Image (cartoon, rainbow, N blue to C red; front, side, top):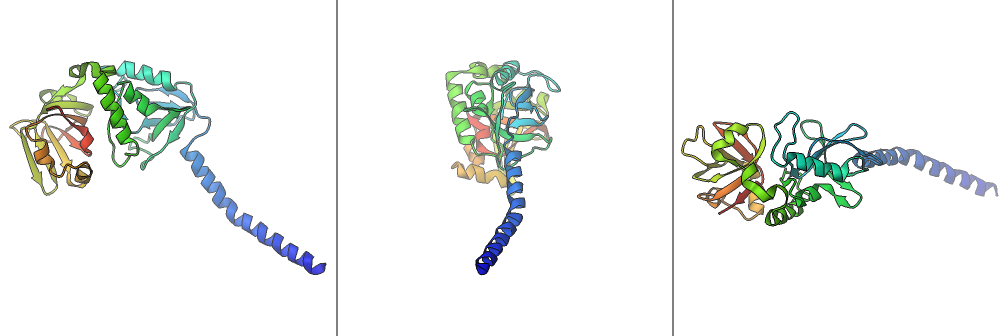
Amino acid sequence: MQKRRKNNRKLLTIIVAFFIIITPFVISKTHRLFAQTPKGLFVKKVFDGDTILLSNDRIVRYIGIDAPESGGLKPVEYFGVDAKKLNEELTKGKVVRLEMDVERIDKYGRTLAYVYVDEIFVNMRLVELGAAVARPYPPNLKYHKELAQKMELARNKKRGFWADVDTWMVTVKDAGSHIGLSKTVVGRVLHSDRKSFGVFLNFGNDFSKDFTVFISDKNLTYFADSGIYNPASKYLGKVVEITGTIREKNGPSIAVKHPDQIYIRE
């Protein structure tokens, strides 16, 4: 009997020691889980078609889409107010669930997420309605193919801003008037060049001031994955739509990271 009690005390000691060791790990893991997927948080404010404010004052930027501006620090864009209203209808005052990708925070300190209200995938719904474009942001590409397919459907059905693309797309001649803004620029590729550090697509004859697209060598892998092994020849002579942020670099320029930022019209 005494031996059995002694063995029981040993077993109890081992069990207690196990829980002392494992508890911090469990707590830490649980904390990370809740940090990734907040429970019971609702949308306090909608800034525009792709950005919201949660009840814990966290700003969330939707991954994989880009909606037109609705005002604030940037000028109101075509369908921007409508996009904001649609986002409000989907999310304002409602409890949301967040799903993350590779990157959790952007350079502005905003949380990057795929947003769900019940069973509605909000990012995708906005693309379906023609209130946002599917824009790839490598390496956050978890649902890009699905988003791109929904955008193609919205475009074919002429939903939302796809009903009048010429109203909101920018010509290469006007690209310089939109520095710092995310836009879709339309034009014909007149020259292309493959350098050791990347590919240049030029839309004019004056390389020092005309609109240019640059594809960095490190991003050519995404093109190869899509079967585009020579972008310099692929787009030469074609009328294309380029979606991205316009920067000033020897004239207006967009740095393209993914082939789905380039759409061939003809």
